Length: 148
Image (cartoon, rainbow, N blue to C red; front, side):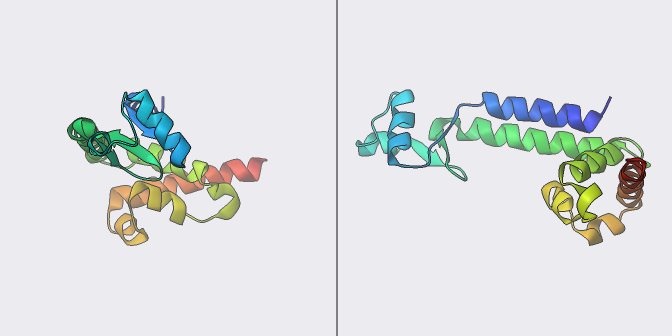
């Protein structure tokens, strides 16, 4: 079983279950506010909402729990990476998953996958475990592509 994929899926499910809302225009924003029992035309109701990113909104009262969840997810990822002493386990799975998701087999470009993971090429080359994990993942993908 791929530990990385399982953790990523669990984290995504938790984020999807979190009480966030999305709006990409005034009408959608009004509908979102209504869903939360708030009125988009009232300043006191607008003051209860905060924008997060890319059309995502959250009730201000939920921000501490959202931050805690994000922090916990980051700590879980960091612990899994730290526990992989060789780069053959979680680290390899992490790189394999993200390289596949970012079409490394076609592009032969690691940049998008590294960006999603928060690494630079220098970070990876500077850590023997990360270097080994990405090299192993690249080799696996290239071999799979050659078999096609």
